[in-house]
Image 1 (cartoon, rainbow, N blue to C red):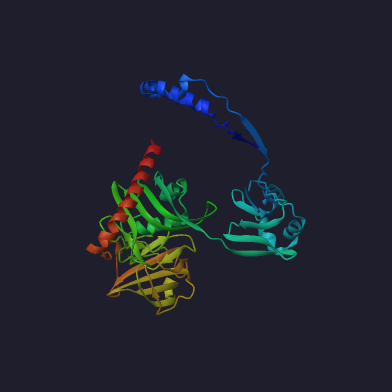
Image 2: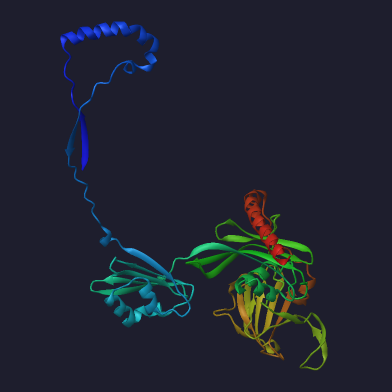
Length: 435
C-alpha cells in the first residue's frame, strides 16, 4: 500500500485584503531589497496548509520461479576408498533407474575404475533426476551416461586434453637417473634430455658430481591430471662447469630442431651412442677375446645393456642388410651419406617391418639388444665404417647440422630469450632449495 499526498488549494483573497497586501508590500519593499537574501517569509506568519491524504492500492509484480526447470552441475574429487555408490550419493543423484543402469549395464563398467584424485561430475534436476554423468578414466577416455528415452546410453571417447608446460631441475650426486628420479622428471623426458645433449656430453663417462640440469617440457592434462608428456621446449645442462642450452625451434611447421642460444644446431650428423641407457663394456682396441681365448683387434664398440634395450639408427640412411650375419648374430647395416656406414650386431630382434632398402632417420628404433652370435652376454656391437673400413668414431670430428641464417635467427631470438628466462628462474629456485 502506498500513500499519496495532495495539497489543497487556498481560498482566493478578498478585494480588501488585496489593498492591504499592496500597502504591506510597499512598506516592506526596502526591507526586501536589504534582506532579500533571507526571504520574505521570515517577516510574516505562515498560513496553515491543509493536507488531504489519498490512499490507493498498487499490485506487486508477480515473480515467476523457474528453479524446478534449472539443472545443477556437481563434481566430486575421488577419495581413497570411495565407491561409486558413495560418489553417486554425494553428487545428489536420486534416480533409481539411473542407478540400476549404472549397476547392471556392461558399458558402464569403466565408471568403477576409480582413481583417487580424479574428478567425477553429474548434472541433475533439482529433484535428483540424472541428466548426465561424466568421468575420465586413467586411460584418458571420457565415459558419459545420458538419458535415452526410458533408459540411458553410455558414450566413450578420448577426452580432450589441455596443453601446458612443466618445469623440473636437479643436481647430480650419484648418477643422472638418480637425479632425474629425485626431481620427478618422467622417463620419456629424461630420454629426450640425453638425446639432445649426447652430441656434446659423454653421459657414460663424463658426468660429475655437482653437474645440474633444468628442463621445460610439454604436458597434456585432463582435470589437472597429467596424462602424458610431450616435447622438451628448452633445456640446460651444466657439465664440469660448462653450461649448454638447447631451445626447440621450428623454422616452419613440422620442421624443427634444437639450437643453442647462438642459433647453432645441437644435432650432429651421427649419434654418439646408438643405445639407450647403456655403458661401454669394450672399446675400439686390442683385447683378449672371451670366447676365442686370444688377443685380437676389436674393431667396434660394445655397449652392455639389458636384453631388449632399444637400438637407434646413428644417422639418416638406407638399410642395406637385415638378418643373420655369422659371428655378429642378428645384425643390421645402414649406408649413410658419403662413404659412411654403420653396423649393429648381436641383436635380440629387429624393429617391426624393417627391411633392406628402407630409409631410416637418425634416432629411429631399428632393433633391440641381445646376445646372438658370438657373444657371452647381452650387448650391442657397434661398428662405424668409412669406405668399408672400421674406424673409432670417438676420435672423429663429425660435422654438425645446419645453423640458422640471419633471417631465421631474428625470429628465433625473442623465443629463445623467453625460454632462457624460464630456465634462469628455474635455476634460481633450485639453488635456493639446495641452500
